Image (cartoon, rainbow, N blue to C red; front, top):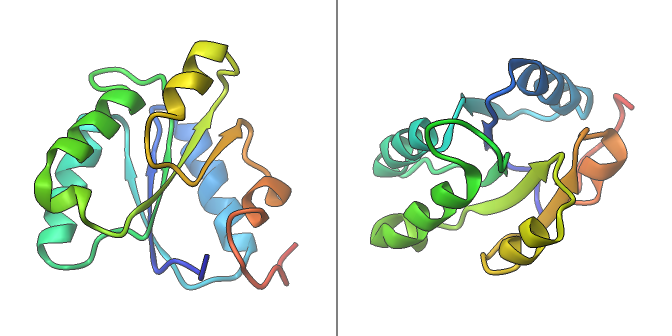
Length: 134
């Protein structure tokens, strides 16, 4: 995958968002990072930026969140005709290793499933980046 220009981090944990943003900066790439605390907020962001033809190229999605969890977000994204055709790559990032979550994740067009915490090594598996900051 080429270096994305816009990434959306969807997680209800502010510390995880902060650490992921720092990790992305360590890769020394020019990227705009959008954040959402739950799936409903993320859907609103995706709709707004995609309307301007600036969809995020990559989404890091937590599963367990209040209001709308990661799987509900994926369902709504697939139901939205204009968003389901957008070239958005999604990676689930979760502390859950429960077999039901892993099986459910396989039902969606994801490019990966990463167990928290997100690390440079785990991130570099999905991004072809200059890791000069590592």
